[in-house]
Length: 331
Image (cartoon, rainbow, N blue to C red; front, side):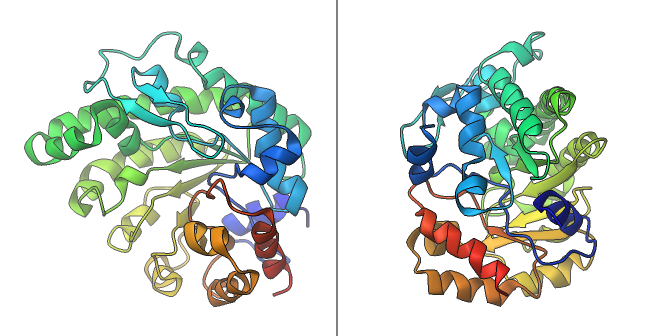
């Protein structure tokens, strides 16, 4: 099987020749930037360099995915947030929020900021890598709402004004639908991943997730599933919401190392594929390779796709990512 068939088959819970070793989250690392001449922050705003860096870990170490972009600020920027673009080993981040939901979505949304960069890079990857799974990430609705309103304000609204939270989520869903439609039109990519870290139980109370966030995610998964495979990533200890996550319509759930995979498998049963959950900030960043192999062996019976549990730290050595790939292939 080629990488594309293996990854898609595994997410669809079909029989594959072996477990895939992939990534649905951030893949930009400094060593790869140096080898392919595509550096941050320029690679966030240049479609050719974004595509080149997004494919770098496939080309250099055999990770079974090409993946763009490298941050969760693309949509926030065009909706009034000020963005600090970061540097060689620092991702873009929101430096200032407008603290209110815009009255309407900009009519020229798809022409603003870095949205055309992601769309053009998507087209390049889809044309260049037919046998490799193409993954494009968008920002989850709770995270985007937090960018716009400010996370502290969002948390206050959860308690004092749930209707404001719902209004914000509804707005963010409509933005996502337009963005998804444009991404699908130029590809489609194989997978659209929706990281929503602000939806984590460590930030958003599970009852709020169940009543407000999950319906928003269902709307997004319906849109993605028309043409692509959908994957939801939520950071942290998601055990309390994992059952609801499995019912949001996504084909796969990406989970961190904070989640015990045996427990997770018991919760979701065979409803969805589980993706992860090798520690990105600890094991993959620091190694040694023997520790990576040990973690891979511990999860193989319960996980469907072996992957970093979250976005790779930019200073992750290529040798450790290669060790992840090799550890899966030899088991």
